Image 1 (tube, rainbow, N blue to C red):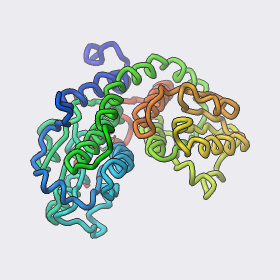
Image 2: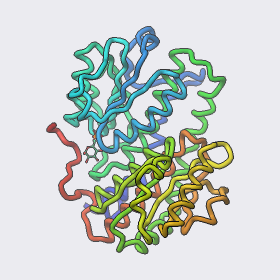
Image 3: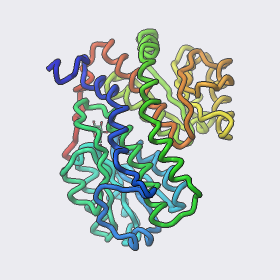
Image 4: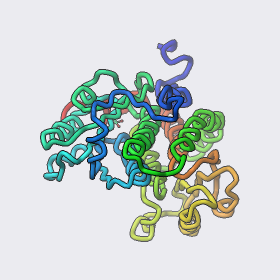
Amino acid sequence: TAAEKSGYDWFMRKEIFEQPRAVADTLLGRYSDNGELVLDEIRIGPEELRRVDKIIIIGCGTAYYAGMVAKYVIEHWTRIGCEVELASEFRYRDPIVDANTLCVAISQSGETADTLQAIRHAREQGSKVIAICNTNGSTIPRESDAVIYTHAGPEIGVASTKGFLTQLIACYLLGLFLAQVRGVKFGDEIGAVMDELAGMPPRIQRLLDGADEVYGLAHELIDQGDYVFLGRHVGYPAAMEGALKLKEIAYLHAEGFAAGELKHGPIAIINPGMPVFVIVPPAGRDQLHDKVVSNIQEVRARGARTIVLAEEDDGEVDAYAERVIRLPRVSTLLQPVLAVVPLQLFACELATALGNDVDQPRNLAKSVTVE
Ligand code: G6P
């Protein structure tokens, strides 16, 4: 009903706009006064966590892309080797997992059969499992050794939005927690990252306040049938998620690529007039920034319509961008939390303008309980 949607036309749009609150709720009570991270139910002892020599992150769809971000973050902060794998592939390839492997299962619903079967397989091999989940008491957390709940509130729209952002936050918390438990020394980076995380809700809100500009773009591009999304480092999974949103609810052909791969094939599909979204890493502090700016030039030279997501004071993109969507300043690892928001708004607006039911897109289910 309209009341349940609090005045929004679709649950999905409501959930996009709930993200500042959802992210704040994921962070609530996680950082104690004495500077220690506190997670929900960690029924794995510190000794066991210190023994971990490999982490495998599993998930499906959007949760898998959150896992891709988690790999960059967890490896950077803990120096433990980390793999990300689609849950549906995991147990059928005879994966190497043992008692020193930590499995991280990401699932909004906690009921996805592929992910559940994967964690069962991991536990049979003696591996410990930590679930990142939004649904209290669901099957995946019940069958895991520990759980970090995202506390985003019920997500009704089939295409995940606040589920994704809060999964990212939980992944940062897990990375910091593992670093803390293992005594990895990175100065007072834990405190600094927690402060930056605490500042994310108002930054997300600023992006939402700019929704009309993104909506305008969606209406301008309404006749386009093929989309490319480019990103690099943690911007790569954000690009994949942007493309997935368009597939899921707008039923459009959209592909996400690692920007560095462009020259190895994808650039061949760039047609004049094709919309190409590019997520640019923070300027100045990041050597990848300039490489991604070159990618914008390359697709622009082939006639693409370049829609560039770049930091607010990044003037270097202006010359090659047909449109710039400004992102608040934040450190590289946290940028996906912001970059994905305009992509969600774009997909939601385009799909509704096309007359699609964005809450229940064709052929898809909110939680897929069969393999
Ligand atoms: C389904 C949904 C996707 C979701 C995926 C994983 O396919 O349509 O939106 O990303 O399942 O769901 P989960 O609940 O495990 O995060």
